[in-house]
Amino acid sequence: MIEDTLTLIHLLTVFWYVMGLAAVQFPLIRGWRLEDVRLKAAAFEEASHYQGLLIVPGIIAMGVSGVFMWTEMDYNLLSTGWLLAQESLYLVSLLICVPLIGLGLRRARLASLQAEKAGKVTAELREALDDNVPIVFSGLATLLLPVMAYLAIFRPA
Image 1 (cartoon, rainbow, N blue to C red):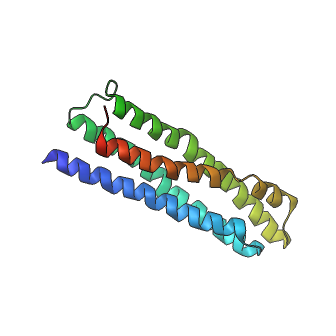
Image 2 (cartoon, one colour):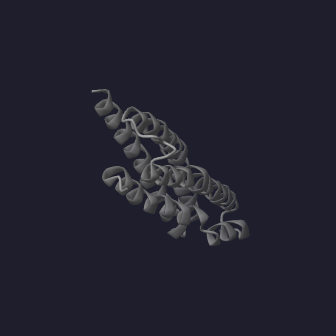
Image 3 (cartoon, rainbow, N blue to C red):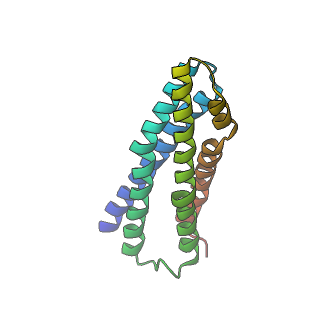
């Protein structure tokens, strides 16, 4: 009974994180492609909002619920090979992808707000848009999800 409850909680936190990735990626890409500076600023503002509301708490809740779930199922978190690989991919997402998404998004958001105030695309905004770090690392975080799902579902030896 407790395993089923923890599995449900973990699954819901995974959906929370996935919703966060989608909610950030759509306005982020829209902001990168738009020409109007006001619309760019609004798109980056929306992406920034969902980054703090969904991605960050979602990935933290996903990790915590996963630890509780796997330990309740009597898996050793340090000696089970596939679970160690799962943890490594999670840490890459948590410690590399999510912070770089946030940093790149913050840079683009601030530059777009400055450009909006100036009424035109500024050199800072052009430079921020040339550096597509948040798009690359949000894509990488998305690509890590099917691998982590495969490891959790099939638990290869």
